[in-house]
Length: 385
Ligand code: KIV
Ligand code: ZN
Image (cartoon, rainbow, N blue to C red; front, side):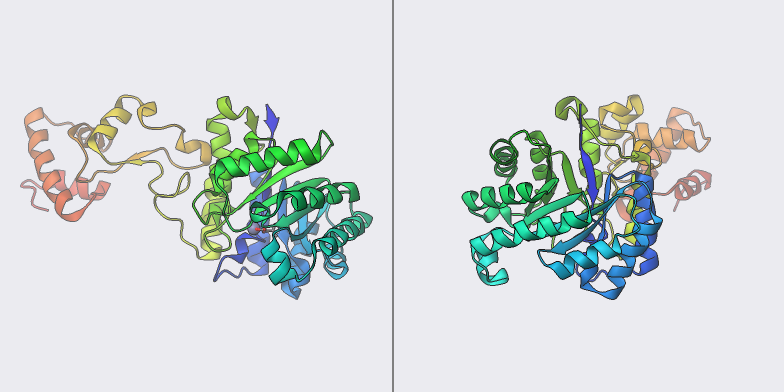
């Protein structure tokens, strides 16, 4: 079984979600929650980008113990100096240096030639290594870049001392087989057996972030960059909870594990939802309200007979209450009877049928019934709710 490192970037890439601005206290609270979740690395922020950002990284580095604390920096001495300063008190500091790889980024954003980008990467990774032993190197938009340049760029970064090389699909453009093949090529043609961790960093513009990250793992990645609830720029980043639970539930397939304390997942998800103001959609995998709810009669009947008929993991495993049967218009008699039994009622079949008919009429008109509404239905002598 391979250990897959979880690099959480909720506080950096996640906070780049449109409309999100976390306060210092909120960032600290989330960082402590991430430490309890037992992530391997917390990317605490981008210190050069502002005074609050610098202070947040500095406080997290001095107060949050356990995970590696990473700070982002462009290939510029000022950025790296600020990152190093903010990380001074960290037990395990990491400087994450990044540039760009695609022609479109070089031409329109960096306004640099390939040779200039190579030179800056070389100098700045070496510069960061003067401060810390743990340096990560990324080049944005690798998925749309020319392979020969990508190969040279990452080779230069490794030679200069990068210990982790991160392969961002910045625009969420890649498909799982393409991204998997890219990671495999990086492993075989760039890393070539050296002691360097390959990392995935995938965005969700086409809804493929998690699939791409998992394809990366299958092809040699040892670190996944992700955020709680998948928040981030535009459509967001890879969702931590999805990758972690996919690796756990399908450990037979991936032959890999994370050290995440899965029972903390739900709590952290709700904390991030509250502090960012970004609601988790009800159908969101793992942490959505409906992720462990069954409404249709056939599914409910199956789950009553054996939970594994329609559940591939226990809700308790991620710190949620056990799966619930929602009593709505699709529900069957078996679930209705079970819900009444759970509330302490037992009725002869004929009375049960009468109550069930009444329940269906109400559910069709008004939607699912709560326990209180069910009790009201049963308690009324002539149910008329
Ligand atoms: O998406 C991206 O390319 C990034 C880098 C800064 C790693 O977030
Ligand atoms: Zn990103």
